[in-house]
Image (cartoon, rainbow, N blue to C red; front, side, top):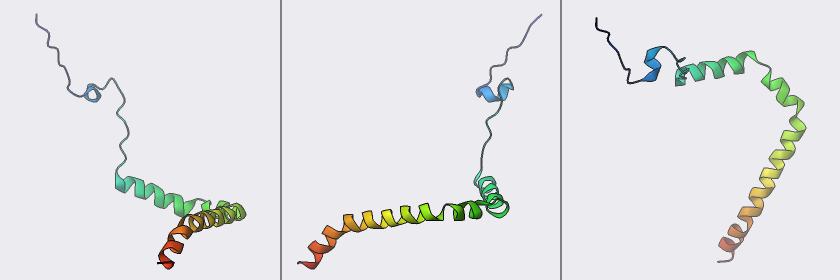
Length: 77
């Protein structure tokens, strides 16, 4: 009596492990589109609009401070 042992190159082919879920670009875009269309993300964003505005002002001020020396050196040439 002979028995045959089969070794799989890919361990996921053996069926003993769950295959990882692969996300393709189309599937991700579909999920993102559904999130945008059917969730209340815009209402939640409006609730924290004050903090988002202050964060944006901070980013603008920081970028102005970073580029101010560059602009001054260009204008003084």
